[in-house]
Image (cartoon, rainbow, N blue to C red):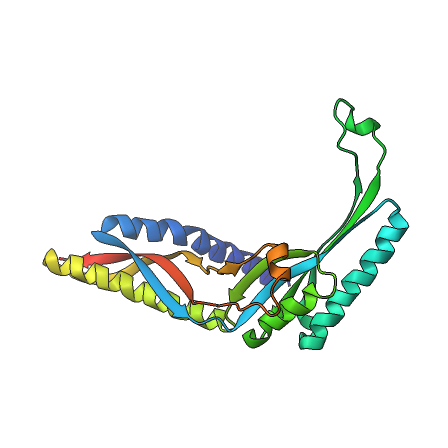
Length: 242
């Protein structure tokens, strides 16, 4: 039993050494051969097929109990209204819930000595709209049911992961094309890929927002989703064969 234990310990130590030596060995190889380092950019443009609407209710009252009561009734009305349009419960998520004292705006008086003149209860949610045809109706229904906070719309795609993979593939292909052009002009050939690093991804989410006063003057607002451009970048180091 002791012999087996010693063998296992030795094996673990050898494997550990191999792992610790792997990175320095790779770096040594990189510096021992001529290389070329290039960056690649991949872009994919898609039409959004879903949106996130951020909305809520903010209520003030001199009584905390009344503020709670009024706020709860108004917020429940908003949530029930957007559910009636077709938004599923699983697609409604609370992003913030706050209760804050409200102080007077009198000057020349330390804030810590002031007594609250009221209370503010705020509640915001993100509602995912999977059918963009319902977007205007969702906003309109919320407005007609005591919504007082509207923080805009973010458009997105349900195929986000698939699109990001496509952008990555285009970035790598772009990097190789750049390297091949450089190698051709230098009369050399590309060898192995020694290193590849994903520099980052950009997934812009176009937003639209408008003032509550302006929004309330609309019956059902017309909202254009536009397009999304997803980007991926990478850096690739190739060996040069002379």
